[in-house]
Amino acid sequence: MLSQPADNYSDKSADKKVSLVLFHNDLRIDDNATLLKAATLASANNGRLLCVYAQDLADTLADKKKGQDYSFKQMGAARQQFLYESLADLDKSLQGLGNRLLFLTAKAETLLEDSAAESDTFAQLCQLIEQQAVTDICVSQTADYNQNQAYTILQNKYPQISWHVQSINTLFMTLPTEELPKSFTQFRKKVETNHDLLKAESDFEICPTSKVLPPMPDAMINSMANSDKYFSANQKIAEKAQQEPDFKGSKTFKGGETNAFRHLNEYFNSDAPSTYKTTRNALDDWTHSTKFSAWLANGSLSVKVLLNRLRHYERDVMANESTYWIWFELLWREYFYWYALNHQQQLFWFKGIAQHEPTTCFDKIRLEQWQNGATSYPIVNACMHQLTQTGYMSNRGRQLVASCFIHELGLDWRYGASYFEQHLIDYDVGSNWGNWQYLAGVGADPRGCRQFNLSKQTQQYDPKGEFIKKWQGNKTD
Ligand SMILES: Cc1cc2nc3c(=O)[nH]c(=O)nc-3n(C[C@H](O)[C@H](O)[C@H](O)COP(=O)(O)OP(=O)(O)OC[C@H]3O[C@@H](n4cnc5c(N)ncnc54)[C@H](O)[C@@H]3O)c2cc1C
Image (cartoon, rainbow, N blue to C red; front, side, top):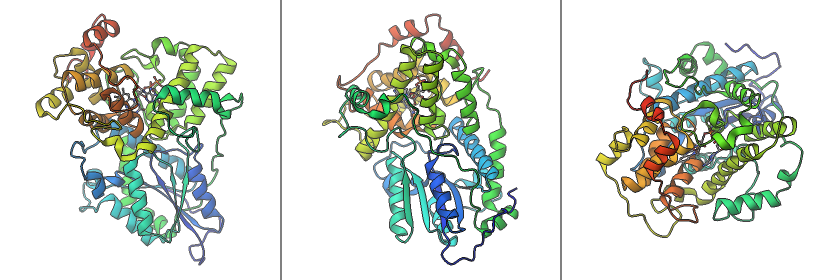
């Protein structure tokens, strides 16, 4: 439980600030300029700080639902578990700094069995803002169109509140080229030849970490002492975060900044970075690719911190084609971040950024076969079982199942992208929808459309059928 802060904070000062950090894909303390900004604003005049995570904030907004009947609503179990672990870890860290995380969710009843029906997340957030007389809201820049819509609605509803947006999930403060190049290769070349930041031998600049945070408003501290709904939810999240999922892999993902750092240390203290390029296409081995995606996606890990570790490895251990390739792949992530920001709702259009709609369509039976891993392609089925059970699939696997979805099954690519969104623990709006558009031939691929030969790919990546055997059924043992 949070102890009363030693500082002489008072809720009574007339001009005190109540700043609210609205966490989204920035679930960390380290290199978090958004949290620092909110803390600085609040501490300037003995103000108060609210740290809030509002799950599915944009889901209840009419704009999101409009035209998105391909969406799968409920978050998959593995993704939800990873999120709980991340939130529990963040709450623990905030507690160590003198604050707490308030968790708002429309699904409170699934966390708190005895709770009455809840209003939606957006309404809960509005209630909190009004009750606590919030003066400033701090958010991290996001490429998520729907989340940005929610921010705009909030801004319009509360014009008296000051908004502060920090860029913390990308390497660059603004688009690093004059305009977004049409292909990744053009983007990479421009960035690599023009950007001073990347030519430098030095590290990426990291934002200082807060050592202590201003406290929550008194009313919140009191309600926490009485274990009200916010903090009962925290308790439940902490309990759920303790549950060990039953995965077939010997090693798996565990959410939260603490685990992100643990993985960062393990990875760069191993030989794996120096062989990455030769192993990255494997279907199913923990060390064959970096496995940073999930922590990067929800912001438990800063991409700058990760790249600094890569640079240290290159300076102190070795630099080769493999270490360069980790950077290369992270540039794909950058590209799709700016792609999503640039194309906004076009990211979700059937015709994507192309001129014509694809000829594929919705078909319930074929969609369910794909989802359930019951197609006539064993490699695809195995990958789909892996996804629904663990929330992860290798990059090669994603390419194969997406190619099958579009070309062999002739399905509307948005259902596939939405199913990935539901299940992937590393779901990232730009990387997911951008890659699906790319494979469907309606995105940033100058070649138009990519189809993989599934039997050749099976021969190449699972010649002994071990991967297929491991993931052939729904059993978890
Ligand atoms: C259809 C499809 C959907 C995808 N959806 C997502 C998604 O929602 N979230 C996500 O993070 N990645 C997505 N990817 C990209 C890629 O598959 C994953 O980033 C990668 O498999 C994650 O494992 P890793 O961290 O071990 O990757 P590594 O191979 O170790 O790569 C290092 C990092 O580079 C980035 N990266 C690698 N490949 C790509 C790529 N093609 N596009 C963008 N970034 C990349 C990731 O941040 C990754 O962590 C998708 C790819 C496809 C084909």
